[in-house]
Structure formats: structure tokens, C-alpha cells
Image (tube, rainbow, N blue to C red; front, side, top):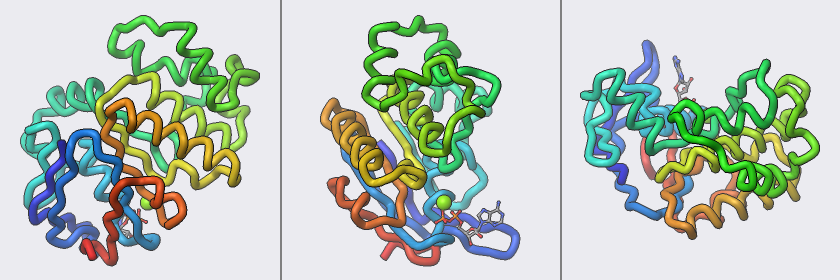
Amino acid sequence: MIKMQNLKKVYKDCVALDTVSMHIRKGEFVAIIGASGSGKTTMLNIIGGLDTDYMGSCVVRNKEMSSLSDVECCTLRSRYISYVYQFFNLISFLTVKENVCLASQIKGKKVDEKELDQVLKLLGLEQKKDSFANELSGGQQQRVAIGRAILAHTDIILADEPTGNLDGENAENVMDILKALNKEGKTIVLVTHDLKIANYADRIIRLEQGKIV
Ligand code: ADP
Ligand code: MG
């Protein structure tokens, strides 16, 4: 599903990823763990097609990410990849319901209201359905971002520190949801600095200063 080979990402004065090679199969649940600054977000951004400026290779669903046109890259992302951002990226002037339905709407699909209510309930957001995103706490925003990824119905879910703003109980709840999505066959790549969270995954890839160790 995802294959990196000798991938190198250099920012102006910093090697963020240094000849990284790894392979993630369809249906795997993989955690990328490492200290702050080790290159985790950079790695996820490249897998997710948000950053195509790299050396070496990153192939997702048989496509080399750096060789896609903007349109091809957006199509691949909207069809197959959901991204739970570290800082949520909700649209502040849309409601919770509008935010979680956005991905489906962009694809021109009607949202199943019953499923929407189920997902909001699962995430403990049923009372907040009509609240605007900028009226939510950090933890609530994080759960909306997860709801958006669930309702997008993509094969691949990329999640950058998805429990970073959640208390213990909510973090466990979110991890149980990700585990259940994985059981349904979704490929999940989760970034975290927390070993307890990483242990939910089937396999852990550890990064140190841009290298897989
Ligand atoms: P992590 O997510 O593991 O905390 P990042 O992937 O965000 O780490 O960053 C890896 C390294 O790349 C860090 O040293 C960081 O300072 C650097 N970096 C990240 N983004 C940029 C950027 N846009 N410009 C320059 N350096 C960056
Ligand atoms: Mg990060």
C-alpha cells in the first residue's frame, strides 16, 4: 500500500528524513514513534501527498507521489487517504456536522444521516452537532477531525498525534475506534511520541533524527 525507498527530505538547513525505507501492507496498523523533531510529521505528510518535494521514492497505491500532477494527487487523496492533522484543520465557520461531512460532500456523495449520528455518538459529540468548530475545546476538535476521517470512507487513514489533546478515557476511546476501523480492513498509519498509544498498532516503526532505528 505504501512503500518508501531511500527517501530523503531536506529542509533548508535540516535533514528531516535520511534515507528512509519501509513498506506498509494493505490492512496493516502501523505506529510511527519518535521524539519531537524526529521526522514523524514529515513522513506522514509525504505519504499523504501534502509534500511531494523529496528525493528517493514514496509509492502509495502504486503511484510515485512526486510524479503526480496536482489534480492526480488531489484525486488520490480524496478517494483513498484521510488525514487527521496534528492541529485538526477544521473549518472554524462550519458546524461539527458540516465539518465531518465535508469530505463526502466534496466527492459529491450524500451523507447517511444515520451513520453520521452513530459516528458523533461514538465520539461523544452528539450534543455538539450544530456547534461551530471554533466553539469547541481542543479535545472536541480532535474528535471532530477523527469523525471526518471515518466518514470519508477511505482505504488509508493517516493520523498525526490523534490523541495528543485527549484525556486518558477519550484517548482510549479514539484508539479503540481506530483499532475497529483497522479490523474492517483499513490501513492505518499513526504518528505518536507515546509508547502506550503506539502499542495499539500491530507494528511500530521508530524514528530517531530522521532515520528508522
Ligand atoms: P516531528 O513530527 O517528529 O516532531 P517534524 O517532521 O515536524 O518532526 O520535523 C522534523 C525536522 O524537520 C525538525 O527538525 C523540524 O525542525 C524540521 N522541519 C519541519 N518542518 C519544517 C519546515 N517547514 N521548514 C524547515 N524545517 C522544518
Ligand atoms: Mg509532528
